[in-house]
Image (tube, rainbow, N blue to C red):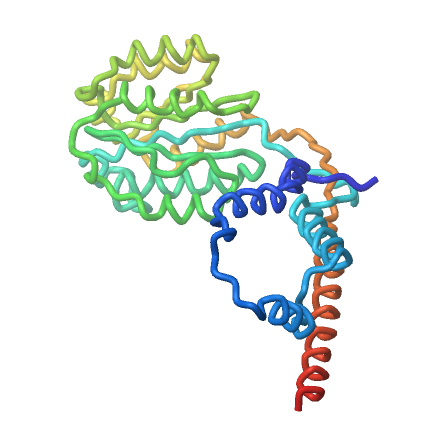
Length: 321
């Protein structure tokens, strides 16, 4: 059955009448104009010579042409076929610490810096999450939404490869990073909202207290996984492991300590196992557009009228010649 995507367009049907009335109101009264004795003869000649004179037939034709344009603009459609789409049910935010301390080279020979090891492990994680939307938030002294939620794993990995440490300062605003990720996930309609927080330091900057962000996450039902990064000596000295454990425990997540590339890979693999891939099926009925048919009829009618008028004009010129 044919239906219209934009039926409100038909409200424009009386528009020519309204424009005509508005235009006539602006026409001056010609009753006081000077009339020459041969005015009627000139008028009669002009009617005879004009090939575009308006008649009742022409008026109906113009209305039909106007209606055809409105029908095309209203986008007539008919149901085509049913398509099955898969909708991700998880939204995952990777919250990555890029403070200057992430430039330390203590993650083994396979990674130059901590950040290099993190990027390699996160890239592997992204490649295996093809049915989820993933976003990236970077933080240090400041916090930045680096990559919005997307299912485009290729774009995510390209953006991830360009991440550099030290661009947002040297301090660590863990509370602000969690706060931004929670605020962004407020718009999400996914059944499961996941945050993976990775840091190599303690909260020493920002406007949001980490505990306040944790309380908000608990209220909103967001699961948070936490990863502490750095050598064993660094972890005990610089990472607030007690807070990271508390965050993971109170939000039904997991806590990991990673001191090399392999332990980072295992942490992300464990998160993937704990958050199995899942999707929801969505059935959509595609609509076949029919607007080109009224446009085709419009073009044919206009072409035939123009051709007829041109031939009439040629004939009139031959008569005058």
